[in-house]
Image (tube, rainbow, N blue to C red; front, side):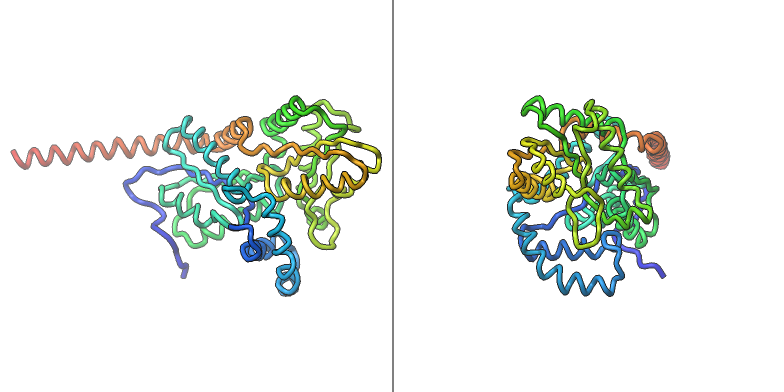
Length: 371
């Protein structure tokens, strides 16, 4: 027999609402070895992230990785940690706040927005409980991953679905699983590059570095590699670059297995050895700056470029909470909400009208009884 959790999934007599769950990967709660170990244990035990038999992987993870990696990663997190904590979390909060404000301007109070992280806090179960408490009967899930992968977008859906296995009445559900080639996304990326070039001048080449995944995942059907290349090609076209002026690479490799190539580190080395002195790098697969951009790209690859003869690797920030980015995301959400908005507005208006008639009838009855 199912075990249901939380508050009742519907409160009779209250207006229904549309919920938008904005999700990203996540971050440790603190830049400490203990907190990082907890975060990595949750992240790396996700079977979507590491496709290795669980018995074997548990031995590797707990016997080797979680004994060594947390302290090293904690030191890296400390270099990017701000007054508000994790840059990914603070930027994501600003994104969700900006999206909520824009949706409120368009639709009033019928739509509510919550932020969640796939791993760590704020959690997906916690965010869904908040939406449920506001009588959300239609739910749109937006993982902030422009390119789809089973490792990211599908894993987010897994976490959402797992919560609903414990609910009596689940909301109507829709998920935006990618927006890698959306004209609004490409336009926002191009604007960020042009704005950077206008302020800082232009490097000799533009490197578009995406987060890597094991090559085996792509061979088995993951579309991520193709979508990364399409994003890069569309951006290069928008910037009017020829093929000699830009390149795609993949970063953040973990383990000894072959990942998507070319690797960002090797590309940076090659460009330094070729005699390039100033290159620009952008990460179009990240919606918000995080450890992989602020520490790995700027510090690690920046130092690597200099070691091989380069002068400066310049990083073009993620879209973060830029106006053009939030406007695009709001338009993307609105396009997916339009059928629901019309329906829920009609439903709530009808319910309000019925409620007012019932109150009027009750008042008439009271008057007649007193008379």
